[in-house]
Image 1 (cartoon, rainbow over the protein chains, first blue to last red):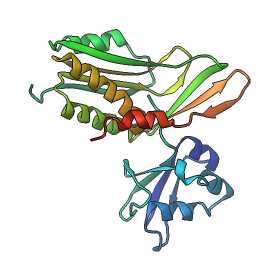
Image 2 (cartoon, rainbow over the protein chains, first blue to last red):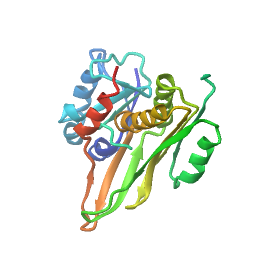
Image 3 (spheres, each protein chain N blue to C red):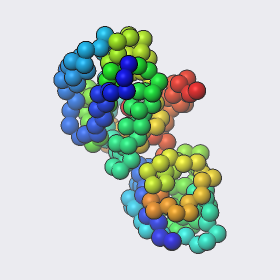
Image 4 (tube, each protein chain N blue to C red):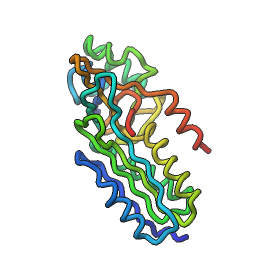
Length: 85
Length: 152
């Protein structure tokens, strides 16, 4: 299952890229699992995801909670809490 | 009031023509128009602010915020314009405006739009300073509290 992962703002800068395509193993069920798994990819990933309280996610352009299953997702975005307005 | 409303939602790098946007709402024939304009704050050596956004999520997020306002208040029109890209102190960032035949509906829904938008639209601000420093703006608990008062 290949998923496009998009990174924004501080997360994007810390990882050093704005997107990557990944194929998580079958035991990766939720957003929280995915973040744990992605954090292993590089020191930058680990640093970007160190503070899970300041991480937000969207599946296919919809905001979701960390416990949301990722099955069927085409695009997952990971970013800090929003600061628009 | 019918559900036939003027809803205008735009995400743009360009400046916001507030007078033209308000004139469009005034032309709807409601009793009043309320608006909020967000401006880049100067001071503390701030030289620029860059607004990053999620290109495929922003428009739909703002449209759903406008739809929520339309469901809660009897509105003749709703306008949301949000900028992205590099801005300077004094530049406009965002405009929320509503038209209604009831002033309370116009004022309340306008406040709702900006409070809701601050916690639910995928924008991120980065500040740049005279000494070369830069930092991402942290989300504020006060913004969460302001949005929470509209929960129901």
